[in-house]
Image 1: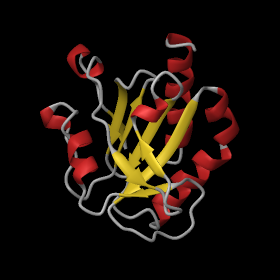
Image 2 (image 1 turned 90 degrees about the vertical axis):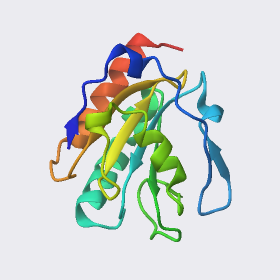
Image 3 (image 1 turned 120 degrees about the vertical axis):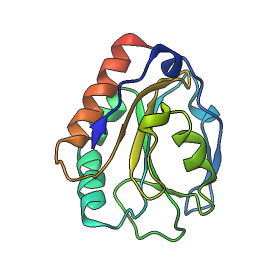
Image 4 (image 1 turned 90 degrees about the horizontal axis):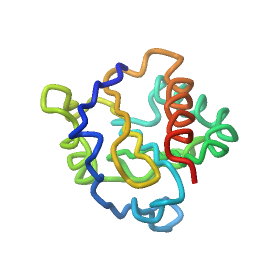
Length: 157
């Protein structure tokens, strides 16, 4: 996975709102985090794949530090009924949310339809950081934590 250099125009975009349901039936929207939390959305084609499992476990292990930095983390997947995972998975069966968030990225950096990507929104809903590509590297969870901690310094409560 490689981090994308976002231009000023990308970083000043407010991400579109969405409404997805947790497996338990609770709605999740982008607006509910506005002025409260940074939001990390990981768009994963298959959250049960081994590389995705490693990433999700790494993020779960860093959960207290992510929470201390004011971040909430969700995986977004096209499948409903994903197995129980260490990070909540929001089903996006029609991939509508995935398409809207992929469109926020600079055109040459937009992920393919089956390519994993991550967006990190600041507490105001603006696109702050993004990455795309294979999940093979083990340090992605640390990189996400570092970006979120940096946002906490830039956008304190």
